[in-house]
Image 1: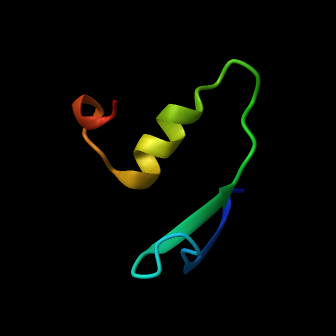
Image 2: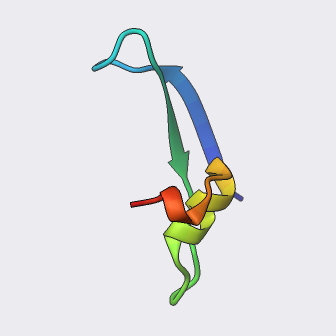
Length: 46
């Protein structure tokens, strides 16, 4: 099960960062998982 922690970004003090920890089976694509997490239109991921 994926785990995440949200905290203050050390490099950008006005921002919040999310740290995700997950594992995927061999042959899976992390970009697919991250797209679902972020709910971003694939055309905007570049």
